[in-house]
Image (cartoon, rainbow, N blue to C red):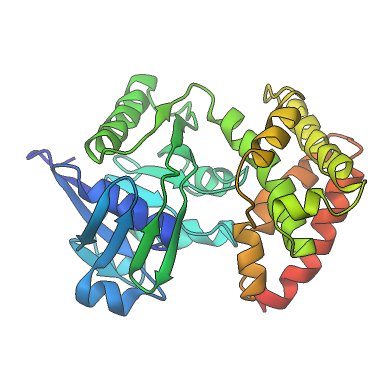
Length: 321
């Protein structure tokens, strides 16, 4: 942080979720926001982007700087916020290296999946990492035009680094939390963010995968045959078994909660299903691949999880190119 209190923040990945959090962070006093954009670069560079939110109203956001790659920023940052789709996570740290100063930069990961933090810890062993799980309903209706529903929540926690003083890590967490507070979004700081990460993976491994493979919405899938709900439950239980073996304290009662929750919601597809329909790469590895690999390492029997992962991997090959 500069002596003036100014915070330089880079947001990497300006899709719907990234744009929502760019809007939130831009509201915070003393934040100077640089965004890395790809498909919407020209629109945002020339005019900023708009967001219409059921919670926050209509706004135009004009970042301090818009770049196509991190290196174009030609500086390092206090916070680098990663909101890109986790398609090839291992390749991202190299792209971010020019903007990361391990002595001051805190990496913030706002993504689906588990194991997201590991490539960043390997590349930047002396940096602090904040890991976030978000439940935000947003879409990019057209380039630079974001529509946000009422769905808005996030859990934030440290991915602890023993080489960094605990008090300093806590200060970095609290400073980022203050930015979210100033941005007037909903969030909670949690002690063990891996609980929330794995809980969401239980959700995504079931609903993203099964709606994509069947091209049905959640309710239609569950009503499609007598075996649909039992298979969904078994898949969720397998993911929970992996989490428990990874020392993440999930309870199997979570399955009942998630089935009840989905049945109490309007029918939905999934972001993975939308990607498949549009022949875009899907977040298969970070949602399914990591739990499958961990399950195998730990000697667990996870036949449904392995089968779903294998089929989606094949489907994804068409989109990755």
